[in-house]
Length: 336
Image: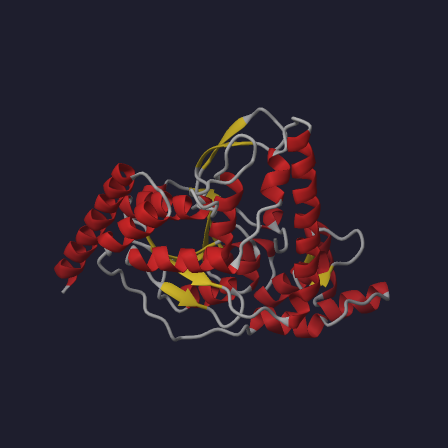
């Protein structure tokens, strides 16, 4: 998903506790996708209730978010709105990739082979999964924010305004949208198995300071966006044989994308519109960043009675949510 410009940014490893007291505007779609991909049985089958409805995303949302809140991290979940027409090609390609992965997974299961990687690649977020997510997040007392278009753009906007401390996403697009501070690996911290290898690695949260990265690379944010466009984004194919380091060198030498394309006698369709989309995205100020009291009865009813979660574990987790809320209120009272 998105453009991979990781090698251009210095990432600072931190502990979850370093984010205590901070609000993070998290890309909800991004987090839900990670939960669906990671929280699966050994054969790749996602967690399900007795009616065959997927519950992996609900498990991740409840237990991971409760752990974050227990550490003092406050999360506002930002949901995508209507995608740009320029993204339709990418969305169609992703659908085709999922279909091929689903077919490969079925074949692996039928022949007794390990198809976990195919199962992960076949992960799909339906409208029902999104509705489930909104329902649970709201019941936990956390903000559910609807973006007009890209959730990452909205998260970047909220961070730039100072309403939250960080934008939370795995994708580097959020930096192209102008998020001054980004935190990665919120949803996947811990030991994770490397794809196709019997090796486990420790994954920690890491932060990226956009302005520091721009200064270290000697570029502006507009030039960063142009580097992303040259490498390829969700809205366009990149230039042939041009990666982040080559794109950085070209921008430093020529100054802007127009000059690079003229020098190469090359073209990128709609690049000016794409650049504008990153620099001035469709966002809203219609949101509230506030933690509310968790509706414990609603959480238990939804997860235990409707989706077959273990009552004892859910109730234990709701206690964490209530304690986190009380600590937040106590801190607020000291400031007033």
